[in-house]
Length: 229
Image 1 (spheres, rainbow, N blue to C red):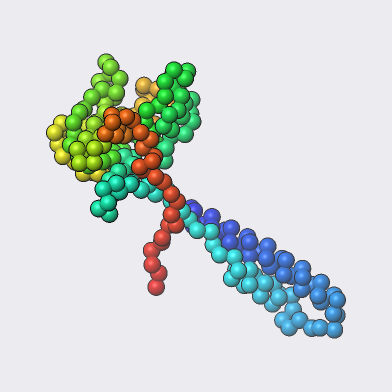
Image 2: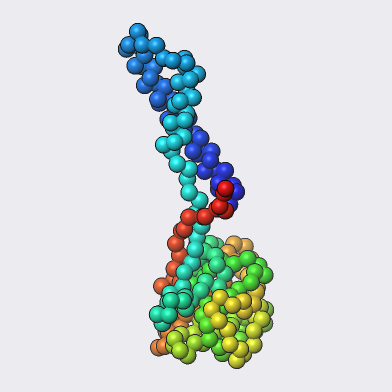
């Protein structure tokens, strides 16, 4: 955050100097055209005035952050879905792409979830409220990589969070945004270039997997600093 603010200040100063140079060039041309006009204070005063004007007219760049918002589908004014990691989606890497419907196994199947980037051992939160209805293996025979399934009978949705070390039990009630475990890294399963991530599946009342980014959307918002005074 501090680095972004310093960068914005440097950009503003550079633009101010550019503006000052332009103003000086115009003023110099005018002075040559009217040699009888005397500039009070000389070149130094003129340069100081130009820098001040440039600083006033070029605002500092606004720092921004990526914010994820869950849809409110029951109309109670509260988000019903959440990004389990809080990070951006996985982009293309050595093993493919993390978006919903991306090609898998040479095109023989489609990706049925959305991958959200994660840090090893970071806390993961419930993507929906409901009850823990299953804790299973992400891959048969691999006890290290698990998933947690949460079902919400009121909303008629279920969600599965993959690559998690669970800290909940079957039958437990959880609320959206509540910690449910920590991320288990994929470095050993997929060495050599896969971005560490959590695989999230959202299942509707028909039992169909749907694109989680239709219900959990991202946007950039200005960073609001502490009040001064």
